[in-house]
Image (cartoon, rainbow, N blue to C red; front, side, top):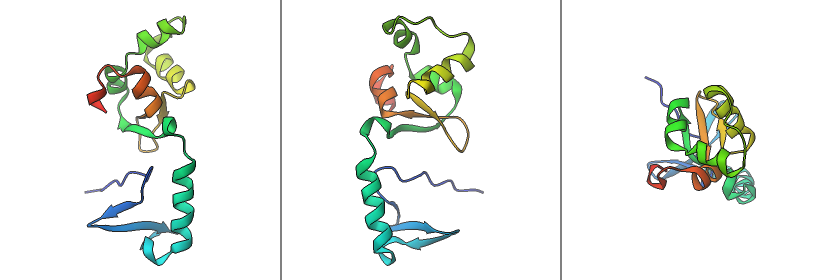
Length: 122
């Protein structure tokens, strides 16, 4: 069994109320590294809301189910790209989605706010 822990995006990763950070290839208690904690909070403060992730590790099919991409292309006056790959690439080019390192896609807050079929899905 493999446990995947999502990347921290707005606050440090916690387990049973304890915050952790990776130092090299080891996990350490964040409280033992105050300089890294300060740096981490600075990074969180610099990432624009639109670039944060609304959904992570989503399959191509689910991206297209959750986002009203035809309306997006229509509003911009663009032709709908050919095939799933073309649609996903164009959404990525417009920062609506980003490739997920673990496979699939991440939907950004920008993509969710502008193109969600149902905001409840996020």
